[in-house]
Each structure stands twice: as C-alpha cells, then as structure tokens.
Image: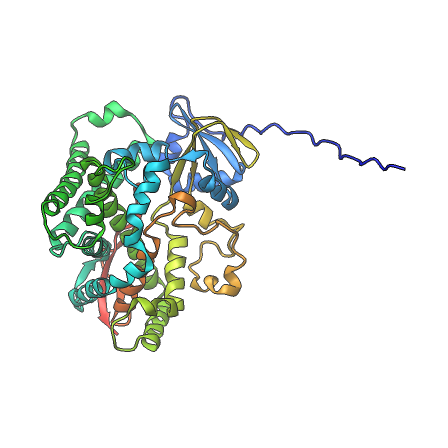
Length: 455
C-alpha cells in the first residue's frame, strides 16, 4: 500500500501595504513647516502614526520608519543606498567619500581607511589623546569662565588632525574647523527642510556667511593635501594612505577623492565627537554624582599615571556614562536612505527612488524600549539591564556596510578625555551658560559656559 504525501495548502501571498500619510500637511509646504518649527518633536511623534508612514517635505514624499527593528532592517538592506534630502544637502560639503558612496567604490574606500581605525592603531593614538586632554585641563584655570562647547570641538579637531593626518601645528586648524562647521551645519539644516534652491542664492548676509564657511572648509582640506603631497618621507597615517591609494583600475585615486575624504575625516571626527563630548560634560554637570563616580573609578583603575587604551575596558561606569549620553543626546539625530529598486520594509511597499528617513534620537528615546526614557541613567547599561534593550534600539554608529568606521576611535577618545579631565576638575555651570540645543544637521549645546573647580 502506498501512502500519498499530503502537501500543505499554499499560503496566499500578501500584497505589501501602502504606508499611511501623516495628516496635517499644508498645500505646497507639506510637513516642512512642522519639521522646521520642531523637527525633533515631529519625528518623535511619527511613532504614534505607525511603523512606516509617509510625510511630505514640500512637494517631495518621504517614508519614515519608527521602530528599532525596521531601522536595523533598513540599514542592513542592500536595496537601500545613500540618498535623500539629508545627503543631497551634505553633498556640497562632503562630496564622494566613504560616508556618501555605495557599492564597489564604498568598499574600496573603507578598505583604505580601516587600517587607521583598527584597535591596534587606536592604541598608538592614546598618547595624543591623553596629551590633548592634559593640555585642556591645564587651560581650564580655576575661576575662569570657559565655553566648553567650543573647547570640546577644538580638542576633537586637534586629536583627529594629529592622529589621522599627522599634523602637529593644530591650533589654527582646530579654530578654523570649529568656526566653519558651526555655520555650515546650521545652514544645511534649513536647506534640507526648506529646499528652496534659488532663495539660497540671494546675496543676503546669512547666505554669504554660509558660502564663506563652506569655502573655508574646502580650502583647508586643499591646504592639508598640498602640504603633504610633495613630501618624500610621508608619515604613516590615513592621509598618506589616501595619497597612495589606488582605484578599481589600479590607478591613483583622483585629487577630488583625496580632497573629499580629508573633508569627511575632519567633519565626522570633529562635529559628532565634539558635540558628544560637550553633551557629556553638560550631563555630568547636571548630575554631579555620576562625575564623582567617574572620578573614583579612574582613581581606582588608573591611579596617578596617564590613562591608556588598555585601561578603557576596565572603566565600566565611565563607558556607561558615554553610552547613556549618546543615547539621550545623540549628535546625529536624523538619517536617510534611498530605495534603489521597488522593495518592501516591514510589509510596506517602498517604490524605487523613494527616500526613507528615521531619527536615532526618537528611536533611542522610545518609551517602548526604555524605562524612564528621558532620564539620564548610566546604570541602565549594566549587562543585567542592557540585555532587555531591543536590538537596534541603540545603534548610534549605525550598522551594516555604512557603519561608522571610526566608532572605536571616537569611544576611545571620549573615554581617555573624560578619564583625564574629570578626576582633576569639577566643571560647574557659569553665568551666561546657554544649554539649549543648537539645531543643525547635528545637535550640540549652544554655549556651555562652565567654571573649573579643582578636585
């Protein structure tokens, strides 16, 4: 007797859903006015409308994802590449470097950069990071009022220039980078949200200031490259690797690509890390009990010697403070991708060429992922509590092929600066402090005036 196999009934294929359009848009402007008025609140409230929703910036439709799972799926899906109003706006600054390319070019660029950001390479930078942190501590004389927002950006610019470009005379460079980026990123936010191209060509003071700052960043990169290119004995560093890199055909990469990569190194290494350091100092001043714990931890692990790269993993609370500051006050608050082909995300249809946006700030402050989501609580990153955080609910450096190559460098720099600075000084708010958020392509405290008190 034969036994016939029983085949399961075929499941009915489901058509992808059309994401709902968020109400409240205006004719012509769409949701641009809400984004311009309160972008952080607007993107955060999108979670109330669904996992994937549609919004309009002017005549352009955007798709927004609002859950950790789907932001991870978006970053890992090869159907989505770099694109959208954010990257279109940044193009005039960043050009075509590792942060803004896809495919074979992107992979080749990452391979060129990765040796400079490996952990064994970062260990060689510990002395530079500690020297700059000690120099900052020496400059913070008791009783002086200091703009720590500006100081945070200066130290990160100097560290990046010394480590990645092997430039030793960094005071002027750091000041130029800080001044230019302060203007550029604020102006770029307006251009991203209100994309009225011809308007920004009008010769009004704010537009001229933006154009001058943009030209200054490009001029600075050109000067760095021009000074190093003719050198016979080039130092081992990222800039040298770029000058000696080959393209897909075995030919030297173009002068424009070298220029774009240098700009991206200066911008990414200064803007995001500088903003994060400023936010950490702000939060430690607001929560001095955690500054005390950092100080005591460093004394117990490091003692009176200079902190090293090998000490970092032992500084548990210091690292938790950094992670929690990044969660609560991320420098990067908005990211975008562009669909290369018609695809779907979370069961929703995404047409070819559509731009998809999400907010790391909204994801990292989601009450569905975090208890007391607006509270500064470094202890939430103890292993027994951190295991309950949903996957991708904390991915400040992104994931997948576009994960930031400098993540370990940035975390090491922040840890060494804090471990050097905090045991020496208590930083208190000073008169004139403006702790409000300066809204641009990135977020930073506007003017963090502080006074140093020796511990």
